[in-house]
Length: 186
View 1 (tube, helix red, strand yellow):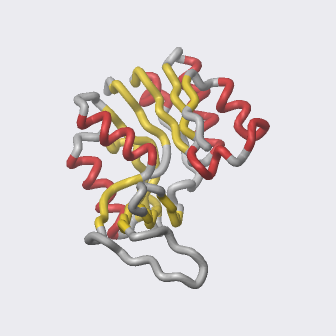
View 2 (cartoon, one colour; view 1 turned 60 degrees about the horizontal axis):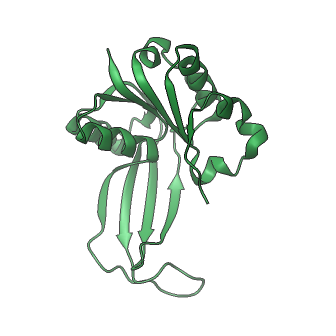
């Protein structure tokens, strides 16, 4: 299968709450709008939004065999994202509670569930994609996927996100060596 973009990383069940202010110790934040839920996770968002722009996209990631995993998978199908490399594991899917205040500042509370479970990567899948977009997940998976992409001279984009950016250059060195475009974080 030929793809414009393969995305590697988290597929999450997102719950978004729009609040008057972000929580502070011993204070109450008030939800200002109906609570919303949707598929989420950086890799998932890139795959879905790229598919909405007309690109042929696929996701390499993990979901649990729970209700949220089925929701995440059906959300990919709804937007035409290929899920042949989305692995289902026994356990809970990843979930994020996203708090957004009036000035659009965000706080995220995340449970990774099975999203970072060790797994293999199909070399042919990456070989047949023009771009590989990677986000913060298992470093071994990212290293392996980016190595395959480099071998086949694919363009690699890497957004380490909040969690993996803190790992530092030494732990990310092999991944960064294979990266064409790095998305910098705060």
